[in-house]
Image (tube, rainbow, N blue to C red; front, side, top):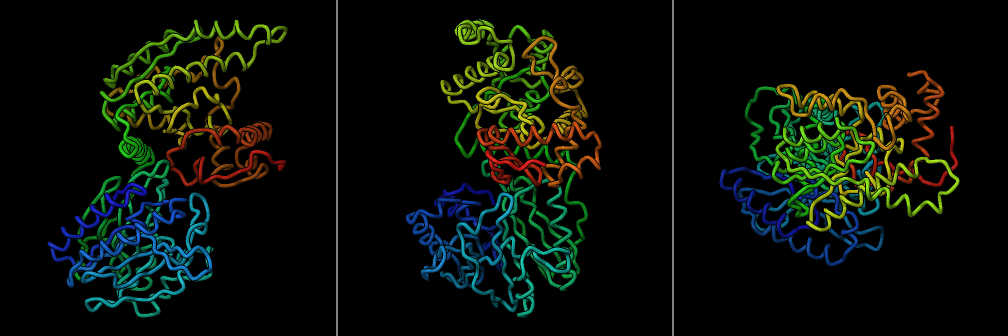
Length: 539
């Protein structure tokens, strides 16, 4: 199920409608994801008393729609104030015969990466099974099932709530989940859950949320396992889905659950843009088109997400823009069928430079003059966004954002950083995947040397290492948390590594100010990576 965070009235209607559909098909129990009613994660909405009160009313209202034959299990928040802790719980609510029959709170509250649940919730006081139609249901919530001692060599928590349910005699495991996607995560889910079900000889229904909530993308792909550890039913990815899992029926095992990186990222980013546009109410997208691979990629993804007629690309040439860049941008726009406009910035740049002459007198031109061009482009794009109510997308990739190769209030302007979690080398791989059957992104854009075109004959490698080397260093530093000596041992180039790590550390202030980044890896910039701007640790 896809929901909108905080839109409890419409989320409720969807839950009740789907329950009624399943009840009509004689399902025994209808299962919805973690926090299905309120959305994952409602963050500080939880601190609003009026919000909690409304959710409590709707929890009961949903249960009131149930009959005696078909139960409902859905995720929500519950409140029980005992003057200790927050008094709020992340709960799985089971409704039956018109009332709430059972509540199981979440035990393990993740507090790493993008998760911050201990700020809002209390941990379950205990776990219990629920007996229904001859089965002993062992109900858990997301993280509760990610602490299996048979799978993990190093566990994050001392307690294992699912094992406790098994010890109590559970005959069927149910887990409701809101697990954000990062490449490789779906395969990991399958492997971990397969080990759990095979070891304990128990079937499992693992029900995932789907949708994008600003920067977090949830991929769906609910999984059902038999007692032999075989994945036997799987929901759609990047789409709502409804299907019935009969624990008494035999199904053919499902082996493949994840596509190659380029295909997965392609789907996830398009979905993330579409969800952001629909949930925020925008109707049209605008972006700057430079003739480079990054803006070309974002233009393509935007057109796929919302349709070509709902995208406007703006060419903003300066005196340093090559004719090739302009021609390539036009060719791309025509290939995509999107509208394009040209707004030369040269006159504006000259006017600003003249205004600054008294202040810059006696100094040598440097990045200050170069960035005037980028900031003027940002000003023009924001003006179009404001005037027509268009959503402005930023076009920087993860490699550039990591080392600060971007201009604040210039090419960082916008509401959503579409490829901010995609390394430059991955952008090229993604372009080749897109062009696998026909040339959509012009080959001229793919083969040209990348350049910001802010001074004559400029290329990215004037300031940065080759992207293959840069990205190798960044992956080790950002995603595997390796330090200087370890990185040098793997990639060599000690002076290059030192320079790159310094650039990453010194540009934290820029990342605090950029748009939310669509997350497609295990470690994206934004909510999941928290480093101080002012700090003195250097290695």
